[in-house]
Length: 107
Image 1: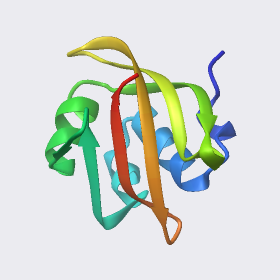
Image 2 (image 1 turned 180 degrees about the horizontal axis):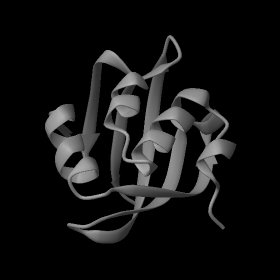
Image 3 (image 1 turned 135 degrees about the horizontal axis):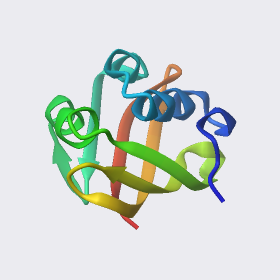
Image 4 (image 1 turned 45 degrees about the horizontal axis):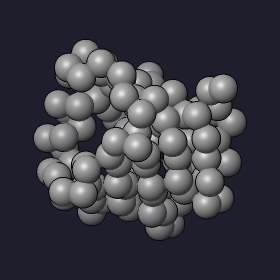
């Protein structure tokens, strides 16, 4: 069963997932600290380049299946126009109410 973004327990994660699913690039970056970092399948990536390619240019969407670790870890079906749909895991680090790092990859 999918967990709606507005029901995610961690406010910073909720803001980021909501921004991804509404394709709102401004809200996405507002949910992140200015120095936020990320990794995909264990490799650090350039956050702006990755988000443009994997989310905004390809209509990325996160359907959360489960959350753990006080809402900082998610398992989700992620889809975009490039890769289709895949089961993914997400882990978030939050600082001062914003996401400072996220790590994603296939689950």
